[in-house]
Image 1 (tube, helix red, strand yellow):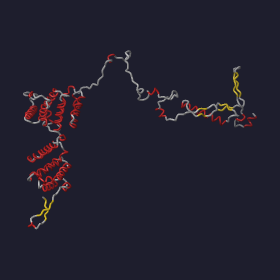
Image 2: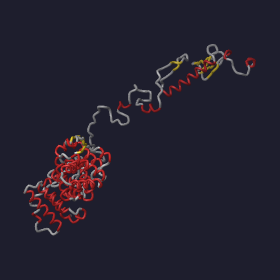
Image 3: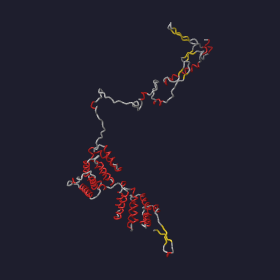
Amino acid sequence: QQQLNERGEGGWCADDLSDSFVSGDEDNGGLVISNKNMNEINGNWLSSSSNSISEARLKAKAKRRLRKNSSRDSGRGDSLSDNGDVVRGTTAAPTSPKSKLLDRKSRLGKGRGLPKKGGAGGKGVWGRSGEVYEPVVVDEKDPNYDEAQENCVYETVVPPLDERHFEKTVTPIVQEYFEHGDTNEVAEQLAELNLGSMRSAVPSLAVSLALEAKASHRELTSRLLADLYGSVLSHSDMEKSFDKLLQELPDLVLDTPGAPQLVGQFIARAVSDQILSKSYIDGYKGKVDCEYVRVTLDRAAVLLKMSMGGLRIDNQWGAGGGQRPVIQLIKEMNLLLKEYILSGDSKEAERCLRDLEVPHFHHEFVYEAVVMVLESKGEKTFKMVLQLLKCLSLSSIITVDQMRRGYKRIYMDIAEINIDVPRAYFILEQFVDKSFNMGIIDMKLRDLCPCRGRKRFVSEGDGSVVKLESC
């Protein structure tokens, strides 16, 4: 007690502590503990002669850190030696939680660090690379085993088209064909469909769509029927289809007044292409009560008789503008102009020019019209061509760009035209001025018109005066 009072109330001093001994008496079976000059701090028995309190605190802190790391890294990391020194081990680099989730190595601290399941596990993995799966053996003792399914053969079956879905499916195919003109693509698309009993309705649907389209589309339809015959459609399918068209003529006339003549041309073309037999028309003789059907069959019979005299039925519809040769287009435009000069019907000329379906080639029509004026004699052709160009310009059948290109081509070729027509420059100047006054061309295009001026001397009686004239 005296020693305690001398040391004060602050606590024990480590220098006055002596060693503590723990000994066991095996004979007596008991345990004797000596507490002489001993202190315990955080479970460590410390001697005042060897260690201080600060060193004990450092060792306890190191132990706590070691236990924390060992629970996190599964025994890998720092450790303590026998004398309490910290031994640095091989520690893994700190990783983020996301990288640990994507890590396929074992997190138990066991094994050799190889991927789980030998690399056969993980998301999107069906097994080890190069592993071949053997065929599955059917267990006959399985309660779900069905003997009837043992020899089943599975195939993709396309249900046949009914009348309601037929038109919705085939109509876009035909309309797309009018744009690209590839019969092989249509045959492939129809082969993928299970037409069934609706196979004979394909020609009648194509013809009914072509009746409301252009002449070039009718020509494409005739080619389509000829190419589908044999591969997709049979002879009986063609006859059934045209029989259906003849029955529906009263309804077709409501939308297309010229349907009887057009269907007759389709029948004549089918007979010419050997899609229908020559006796097809004769089979209706004496059995027709409808007036429209009678007109159709008469039209087909007349065309077939004319074909024997040299008429080409395979070209009765004509070809599309983009498919015609340039020379043929130029000839048709010249015939159109000559027919207009004789008849004076500008509406018919507009219709014929529109039916050519070559809006990108209308500059050639303007060129040929002006050349006809330069080569003509008299005022009739001059005035009629001006009136025609005025009508075509107002109706926008010939665009401003095509009109400009046609006049510029005349400007470029006027020197060669003047060789055959000596007064070409003079006539062209008058025609361009009239065109500007009628609003066919603008002032800029009028000012580009070439003007030929030349010097010539008159007779000596005039005193050799130099005169400027336009010839």
